[in-house]
Length: 556
Image 1 (cartoon, rainbow, N blue to C red):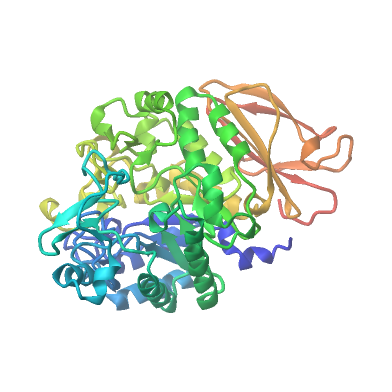
Image 2: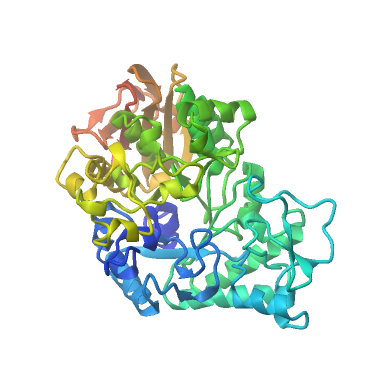
């Protein structure tokens, strides 16, 4: 491959950053974040090294589910501004070198959406067929996504005189996406936002969008991908598919890779937390080795945290209980019987070594890193919000002032809460960390720069390097662009190891190969003797290296 290929398939080496406009910065001091506030913080994201901004739903919505209950796909919720403000953010982000993707939530609408309101009121309405209706509840109905909240997927509607289907909450009726009239409307939604300049979509709950039992239904995803490609040659579809690897591969389009462009790696994410609980890298190492090979244009999204609960549903019950015991010992820190409502730093008792090791690891794995707002400074959750996803959806902490610099509104007027206690803004904020070279923010900025300087991480072939310690994950990623090596220690005490790189493109006995420390303070290239490296890792330590072959012209 050529380096210029990285601009054609930009998502393979992008640094994604997810935020909710509501929680980011309130410019007009009404207690709710807005697009004007976001515009004034785009430079923070550019300085951090973000290359793609992912915006959570900002559409018109009753906000019974954090905006994922949409009542108008073509509008901006007036609390955040209007379409003109959105366009201003788009233009400013592009000027700062950032692409923008938005949420595509089309497996359901809000029950307040005009489509549903007309459908329920008139059986002859064209919108009646936009939803799934029945006169009775079938015996073989599937499980609801929230079994601790909802008692099924069919809900009686008095006005409609029938049951309607809802895979998620009862106020989110499912769209009948198998019908062409609905698919045509979805295409119009996609086309509208592409015309306003977005670079793609994070596609919500993809397995609920199509009937996965019917292979022909994947034609819908292929059609969406083709439509995005025609309207925007560089548009991306980043899918939420929380399934085992073999099933995820189907949503990529298998060898053709012509369905979803990217998917979040939920398997590795869940095995990461099991590895952290055990202080043993084996679960994550095994997951990474089991990753299926992807088509050239596809990519994994690696993440530590997202806007929902930290789901553990792909672990066995015993494994899930291990993670619960380690990181969510109190019932109020758990939700839906499968997830954790906490952020990483409190789960790791605020240990900076361990926190940095985790983020270093995520950036070093083949794929593109996806950050959730506030991770760059080590924000915690609000422990006073028990058993709710809202615990990790608090106001961004910009300063140590009242409300964390998020808003000058009164505390009672804030829509997103402010984290109290030891993780409050007075202790953790952007302004403080901007002036501290030893801060987590400074470390994360170094990670993004190092990642962006090593495109082989997003393009290369992954290999686990043999070494004797179960607590250590040592790996390489190699492509024609270069060879990258990393090692991470999941244990609190140090380890010594000897890495054999001869299987990673460094031929034993070849003169002239050198290795450069990418994250440390010693930029001096060191020679590799007989293709081997001796490594000292501190407790929870992390190391990145670039291997330079003779004749390479890369900067070090």
